[in-house]
Image 1 (cartoon, rainbow, N blue to C red):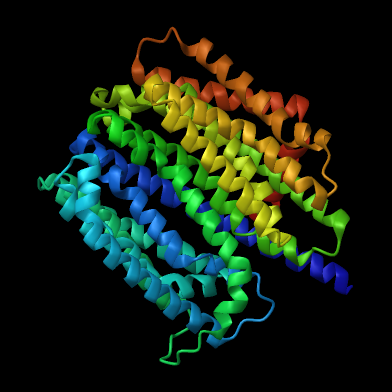
Image 2 (cartoon, rainbow, N blue to C red; image 1 turned 120 degrees about the horizontal axis):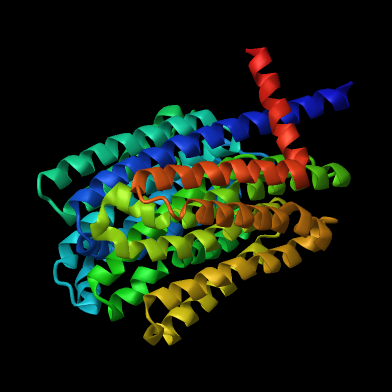
Length: 486
């Protein structure tokens, strides 16, 4: 009876986590998408290019200040107030120190890119990670205690408020400053939300002894987070030196949109994967079953979503942000292909973290980052399109590295990988190709766009019903159950 109760409790936690995480991701990404369209219609590629040049400094500083403390807190068996308090003051101290260093380094950054305007712009934008440092311990509290709803509300409100401010300034003619204000205000609102919902309140007791225990795990996460942020933002840092701000600007929004689509899935799954897998760590057979469902669910959604966006990229860009951004469509297509495979790799990486193997997680992220940097540095003469295509291809291949790294810790065979991942990639690819050729002759832009999506969705459902009906039946049964309960 207790086992059944535990199963029901686990299923309830997983379901609530997936529902709240999924709802949050969908709402936040669509809000971000809508606000992004309004900003894109007003700002230029040069505006985006300027801010993109300094983004990597902010995200790296954020990684340094967080130092993996969130995951370190989650993986601790028992957490007391002194642990959160130590994380709070350490994060604030690191954040303040790094901001001061970057403040005085701003002229060197501007000199590197030969853009004098970056001095003041970077000093202002760097406030985003300093404000964020005040909410790291509170975010760790919410994450450890599976306060997913509270994190959803915080992120959504921060997104709405910051983007409203950014759009207002953009339409008042503040150009790239509007984008910068949006970034800083989002960080501030997010921090305030974490404080509001978290029961933890810092005290002026400076006991940093818990940091030593956390650092054994979190130090590896620190290095990992640095390279994760490098991997996502390295294009601007390296290419901004060798290409114009306009050329760079055309890659910014496609990269952001592909990451937004990917985040709908990864945020949903990340909210439950690590805590749930740790909870059933002693039941190996059950862990395999749960993991297979998680990775199948991710692949089932990731490939049609991102391959579908690749299929309609040209029409999508024209409809949303007008023809002046048409050059960015090819980048959106390339980024989306890599993001689809990266979404699945994320589930493997969460498994590795749940096993406490942060050194393996770190190694895979670092090696990937170094290879990506090597491609961008040594291949800069190939042109932006080819460089991004190569890094996207690396993303697709890296799933095999994650699989090989996870295999020693779970009896997950290569046959499972084909069944749970690549079968959905093939079915999604077939569906999208069929939709493209079936609607290519339609002259009306809007009708072609809508028809391509409709045909792709119908084709994907049909091929899954024929070749892989189990996941469709599970999802259908689950939603029927939810409706009946209501």
